[in-house]
Length: 213
Image (tube, rainbow, N blue to C red; front, side):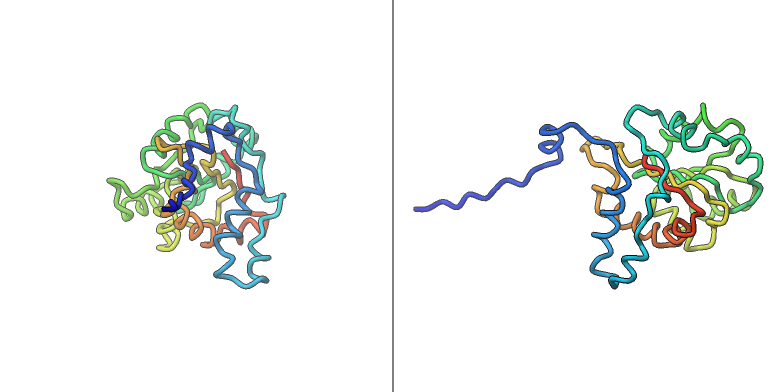
């Protein structure tokens, strides 16, 4: 009797055991965007979604803390922070996979942000209406949160992209299951919707730069 042996599917652990993690590159994000939208958009539309190299900031080479990375990509932060006066908008958006990770990243911001205000932009234990009110009430410089909640705030006109200059993606971090943000299907779907909500257009117009942390 012939036995049919199915090839065991490689896990993330298998892949990482075979080769050490590599830092994210701009080409990695572009590849993810192309593969996600290729069955949904025409060839011309896909070309318009291409993110030029000039849209990217220096990527984290896995040696940086969040504060040191932000100091690298925003060397004039003190001046930018003082000039930002627009409510319901932020200068820096940091996108990560979970509420717990967002809280951790906000704690890591201390050495960078100075007097800048940072706001949690995730769904866990925080109603969207509360976040909208906080954005309207005073000037917020940095938003840190999940793509689902950030996208929902933009869709509801609670968060404007007018003042946004830097989109920082928590690209290299891995959770307990060794998954990066875009390895989680529901997070990836929310993230692609977020990019398509006006951020890619802002990148094409050279108004927003992307950094892979």
